Image (cartoon, rainbow, N blue to C red; front, side):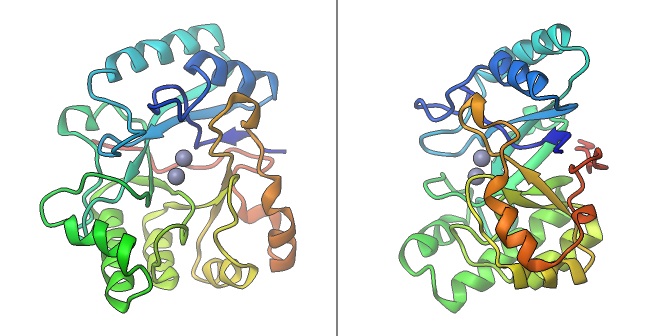
Length: 248
Ligand SMILES: [Zn+2]
Ligand SMILES: [Zn+2]
């Protein structure tokens, strides 16, 4: 069984995007027998859903309350940061960087880019199948993996094209997990095999936006079976992973 879920959203993902409170997520995780839970709301430069700097202190207070109510559940303060430029900028404000236990990083549309990132954003909306998009997106992933302690790459290959081999090599080198995302199957069985051959390790995370979805990753069962890979490569299955923690 899954022992940890490292990608879940709460009402701090704005505009009604996340449905459960921090306490709801902790309660359900605890009821489902999870040992570890990360709260990873959308990053700060997401136009509609991002957590705000203003709300962040209250988020931390809520996490501390949840920790005292569910002492057997280890709760990580996290964010699902957005790639916002080919230089590998993630949308984590300087004053918040050292408050995060873990960083999950994923590509999402409708983010406010940092300087030099407008082309990155527009290209993925308008010419997402172009060679340039592939090269610049891959740059964004490789540079971010170099610059930040990214625990998990969420839904790789979903929403923007990347060179999965180049990204896999770098993720493997850094010790960042490749996510099997509970909402979408973003890689084929062959791609999983290729990534495993590079030394990549996987985490199955729900990406729950409602508390009842916490710990639910069944969507991957068929593809993972097809890959023929050992369940041992999914590091939160029947054990707890060694997460690359944020050292900022
Ligand atoms: Zn996402
Ligand atoms: Zn998410």
